[in-house]
Length: 258
Image (tube, rainbow, N blue to C red):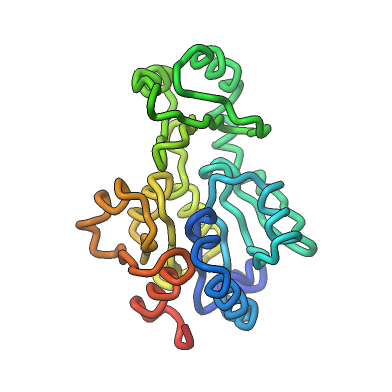
């Protein structure tokens, strides 16, 4: 496939800059005026700027954000902490990319019921009601949480991820935001040197440390800040949310008008 063919099939590959961003606390962070200004900047440059949401949220929530809260529509979504990969078109029509999701589905198989049974009586964990496909998520109460839950999940051949000391995600082994984003970018033919990844909690660590230009926004979880302290390719912004993203775009010189 020629480079021109790649642009034709995946127009995002031909854009000058691609933002791959977490939502809560990151793309949805900052004060209302800052968010509106940044969102307007993106919409004014959509011919040149690509947008990928890399989030723990599910497609229905993303659809609601775009339709009801005025959030710019992404070109693609890496959702459910890296277990959903989808394109977005038209009126926020979110379509899973079956070929890319197949290894994730195979790794998860029928694991959900086994995980629910194993964690049913685990203190400090409350199963979230969302109908996840290839992961399970729990609200975590740090006052009574028993870390043995992590061992239980690892012994099942799965990954356990704690973020913001409030959330406990159970994922297929080796699946998280960073590896899934890399697979999507490779599939789309996007130049990783022109891609900025942005996040604020520990469930963003895998994408911030995957090797692309990255920013931990100013309101980031302290545990994340500690983890990225020695990573030269990760910029720790002063400003929260979208203000921090804008700082990083300028810092890395990824777009001339940022």
